[in-house]
Image (cartoon, rainbow, N blue to C red):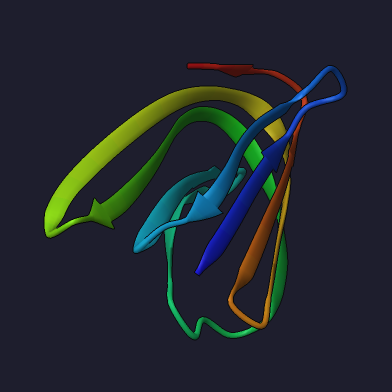
Length: 85
């Protein structure tokens, strides 16, 4: 699925991921390929994404300070207040 992470200042990430885990305002949740459409608020916490490239799996973590996430047709858009890589 395609993930895009944007803050008011810059585009942080754009690309294909296997799955991602978000710090929801009511608890963390994971989004996989073919996930149902949804919109959710994000709290402060760890955003984790898993990417497989050339048969090598890489896990990336970012600290996020809140925002919203939209999932629609295998595209995930994160509008974050602040992200630390």
